[in-house]
Image (cartoon, rainbow over all chains, first blue to last red; front, side, top):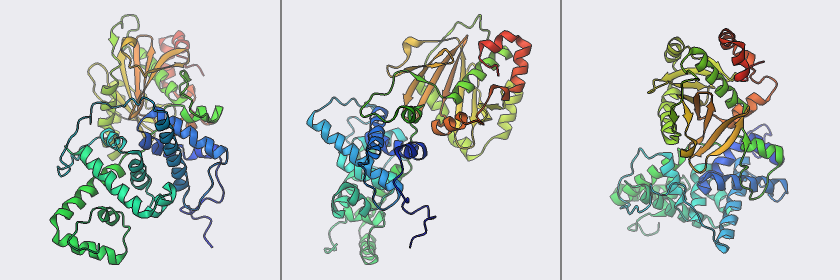
Length: 175
Length: 277
C-alpha cells in the first residue's frame, strides 16, 4: 500500500485543467516550448493540452503527474505535427541564422559556452520523433519504459531515437 | 552486445541513462576499457546530454495563464493582441518613473531624445548579471545603489533592491524576489516605436502605452512615461501575478518614502503617475 503522502507517487485523482494551469503551468510551458521551439506554437500546444484535460480525453495513467502531463503534451505535439504534414504550413524559423548551414564533423568538440538558445535551436532541428524522445528523456526526466509507453513504441526504439537524436544534436552544436 | 568487437552505438545511451542491467553494464565497461573510439563517443554524448538537461525552465509570456484561467483554454487561437499588463510590473514601472522625475534625473520637459528598443541589448545585460546575483545577493551593491541613486529599496511589495550596474546614461537597477531577478533600465526620451520588432505587442498600463516583446529569455516590456522609457526584463509571471492578485498584494502606500518625495514635488505628480492610494 503506497503512502498517499509520498509526493513522488501518483496523484490520487486527475487534476482539473485549472489546477494544472495554476500549479504546473511553468513545467507544462517549458515542455511545450522545448518541443515546439517557439512561443506561439508553445502557447497553442499548452491550450490544446488543457483542452484535452478539460474534455476528459487524457486518461490518467499511473506514474508521476509530470510524466502524465508530458505524455499528453508530447502526443498533442505529435498529433499537430502529423496534422501539419497533411496540410503543410509554412514554418518560419525563430532563430534563422545561427545554425543554418552547419556542416560540422561530429567528432569536433562541443563549445561548452553554448547558449540555451543555441541548444534549443539544435533541438528544434531534430526530426519530431527524435525530438520527442530526447525531450521526454532529458528535459522531463522520464525513463525509457515511460517514454516507450508515452510514445507507443518499443523500448529498443526509444534507445535508438535518443541515441540518434543526441548524435544529431552533437553535430548541430559542434563548433 | 554479443559481438565484443562491434562499437556500442545506442548501447552508450542506455549506459548513460542507467538503463542497463548490472551484467550489461559490466560488459560495456569492459568494452570501454579497450576502445578509445567508444570512450570518445560516450564523453561526447554525455556532454550534449548535459547541455539539454541544464536548459532552464521557460516562462510563458506575461498574463498567458491568467488569460486562460479567465477565458478558458481555446484551441488554436492566436494570443490576444492586446492584454493588460501584470500588476506587479505596472507598479514597478510606475514607481520607477515617478522616482526618476522626483529625483530630477529626468526633466520631463527637455527629455526629447529617441530611445531605441534594442531588445537584445537589454536581454543580454540582464542575462549577464543574473548568474552572479543568484550566486550571492549583494547587500553592498544594494546599499550603494540606495546611497548613490536613492533607489527605492522595494518595488511592488515583492521585489527587493539587490544591486545595480552603472549604465551609459542611467543605471540598470536589479530587484529580486528571492528567486528571480528583474532588471529595470531607464532611458530618458521617447521610445522609437518605428524600430520595434514586428512581434512587439501593444499593452495598456494604467492608460499608458507599453510594448511587450517576446524573446527566448521571456518578455521584455518597454513602457513610455512622460520623458522616460522604462524597460523591464526577466520577471516571473506566475509568481508575481499570484503575489499581487491576492488581498495582501502590493499597494501604493507601501512606497511611503517615495510618496513623501512626491508630495514635496507637488501633489499633481501623484495623479500623473497613478500612485495615489
